[in-house]
Image (cartoon, rainbow, N blue to C red; front, side, top):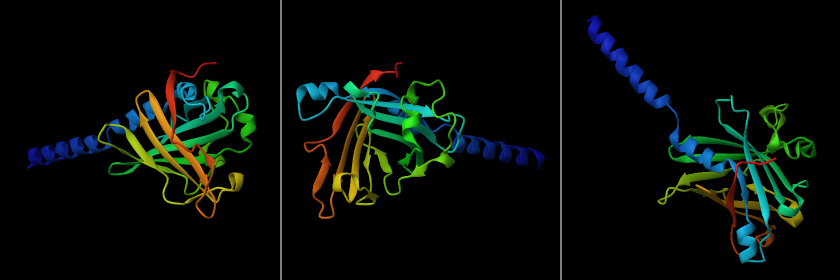
Length: 209
């Protein structure tokens, strides 16, 4: 009887270990998100796009609830004046769905260039942030192995440049991130963002000083 009980226990422990083991898809997604990216090649090919620099670095790496990133976007010629600073919380929701939730920083100007720090945002925590309700991007792996998704309907409220809501469409793969952010007014007319399609950010390497 004792041997049967021990065998059953070993099976349960093995199954539990398998269920709680590393999430390989989440690890792949967050690895592909990490680093320095730029749309310079796209800007050269099509003058309707700007050369934008995108920096994405992990923060609070000891946390187990999710993977967290500090994100800065700036025109390449004005990196000291980023036009967007955010924190992303990336996690698997259920099944094959991943969520990249978006948070605003308190006094963001105090954190410009934090992606260069050895421990970015070390003086802050998730409790200091403000979640941007409805602005999370939901991602799934597509047939090509990429992670693709978008915000949901008109749930991301925005007042930027006369907008009523914003949308984001994202594709993430090894060495490249495509992001199409747009704002729409109450009549669903586009009022900001690229018109032709997504910005294409190619990996430039690890964040540099």
